[in-house]
Amino acid sequence: MPLPFFTADRAGSTLPVWPVLAADLERWLTGRTQVQARWVRAAGFTAQAGRVLAVPGEDGDCVGFLFGLGGGEDGFAYGALAEALPPGRYRFEGEIGATRAAFGFALGTYRFGRYRGDGRNDLPVLVLPETVDAAELERAVEAAFLVRDLVNTPANDLGPAELVEAGLDLARRHGATAEVTRGEALARAFPLIHAVGRGSERPPALLDIHWGDVKAPTLTLVGKGVCFDSGGLDIKPSSGMALMKKDMGGAAHVLALAHRIMGAGLNVRLRVLVPAVENSVSGAAFRPGDVLTSRKGVTVEIGNTDAEGRLILADALTLACEAKPDLLIDFATLTGAARVALGPDLPALFTDDDALAADLARRAAAEADPLWRLPLWAPYRQDIDSKVADLNNAGAGGFAGAITAALFLQRFVAEGTRWAHLDIYSWNAKARPGRPVGGEAQTIRAWFALLRDLYPA
Picture (spheres, helix red, strand yellow):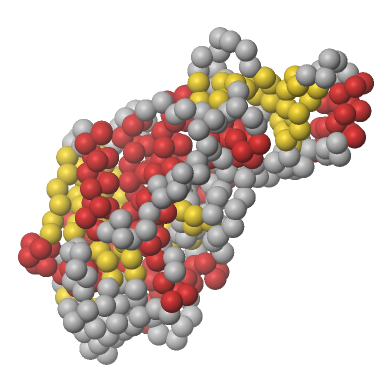
């Protein structure tokens, strides 16, 4: 669907926006009139990142806007334009990365207005340069907004059923097939997913989407869909529960990435698996010390009911591997340990495929969509040993929590499978240009750039 802040119609009047690096400002000023140069200097404009300044003509009317890029490191800086520019039609002028600039501009238009009417109805409109693939850009923006909308929606309006319905809507939009497993069928086939979700009045489910040519290479995406995480009987403190509506961020990511893959028509047989649960407290909740038998037959001692995400992923990863995919990727808001190690903006990547990690890192740098590889350090496997079962879901000792969680997942990935695990935060804790406080998409642009090269349409 066309986005209201973009147009490809170049007819009609537009005002220029001149993006300028701090190092290039003086060179830009030498090409302007003396009045304009004096105006810019008098305004104290030094091309600070995100700063916008109206530029007057000889008659005093505005003839365009200067936009500061600072040192050029922040690809989201263009988001400041959408907030600062008055209503009207605009075009970029100068040497810029047009697609990234337009994407950043679009991110700055985002508002989560479901519960209050504070969104802008008079957004500036950007006339897209001819070099921009408008359809692909719009899918990139829609994917980012889909993650933000799903993650920002509170759990009272986004439980397992609603998350599954969001996936079904996406499947219908792209002509994909989908099935949902619930109830006794879920308990029999996916015992870990059922165990985590059975404590809630809102029953758990597994969404399974298929799309694409059955003869194409197979790609499976798995997303953690914990719609709210109380911690279960190992209940979180209130401060730890405050953001747990975002614990389905992994599911939001795989749906958004699937949207880009299907919309671009990549040559791939795509499968999307979303185990959707609420980890709640009731007489039916699973308990610390329980021993559960997974779909794979691996037994798991519950060391902590707040380590529930790896349990539901374990059954979904097992199902995924039964079909022997060429590439398997999972996304999950899995551990606080990853955030302690890398902070909120740098998702952790785990894979034992060096070539895949290197290829993804190059795309991440090119797309300004960062991530950082952490090791699947085999000696730490002993930290998830159990005296009564094959595994314990909570690592002993309190160290390397992101690594031991990834090692737990690896136990459910069939040997020889090309697999990557993303431990993401999916949230902006502070507002910056293009990144309001709230849900955030991470690594989707990097992954899509790689997948587009691996499976060209």
